[in-house]
Image 1 (cartoon, helix red, strand yellow):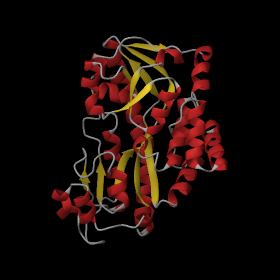
Image 2 (image 1 turned 90 degrees about the vertical axis):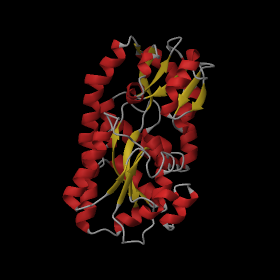
Image 3 (image 1 turned 180 degrees about the vertical axis):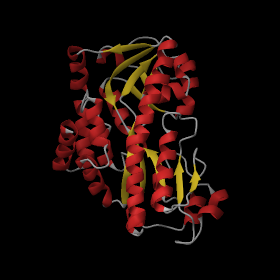
Length: 335
């Protein structure tokens, strides 16, 4: 995708107030980093700060940083970056995997029950990440590294979910296309809502539950309303740092190295911080609120795996390359 003037994109997006910041000629502006994440994400935002700090330390990047959607909203981040509004964005993969389907390989349900194996697949130096970047190159994007947020569970208010039949007819909030396909495969009705709308939607009965990772629950105080959480690998996603491939290629070797190392820090140290927060703060908060976490044994999991096989098939069709799809899934399972 060819870059267009930053001012033009901002005006088209209704963000003209920032055009003076981001409307400079190429080479005349400080590099811009943007994310929709806010500092209130105790599990995620430290990783963003680690990434930016390492890029500054090793590459001398003097970023203009726009958190909290100040420059671009969650759905605008990657399109804005590809149009030159930002140089580096930190984004949840679920928002963009329909446009960049190779990213969906790490979001599919039940590819592995072993979170450590999933983490190894997410490593920026893994064969899986190399395959992702090979596919992204054709769309002028590069993934520098990302945090694995943990597996997504099914959370409900009125009844626990122990079988696919328990999902039938439920209105379940999802944040991405693959999550939506998973809910549909289980017989539920996916509802796309921003996380800021969840508390009221649950309170008013607009939705019956949600599919999400643990951080969404606690960051929005949803443990005050939710009563059940079914713990299994219903989905997953990463929070990644992306940049344009042509911008990356035009940097000095030291700066490219700095961004790559910053991506490793985001993955390694950012994910470690996330896991620590989840284990010592978020999980205790959920349990203390009285939410029942339901663990499923192998026999109970089998019907769920069978039901979501159609999600894998749809993803393969979206990717449009059976050999690449098979390789991606095998790399995750063998990591």
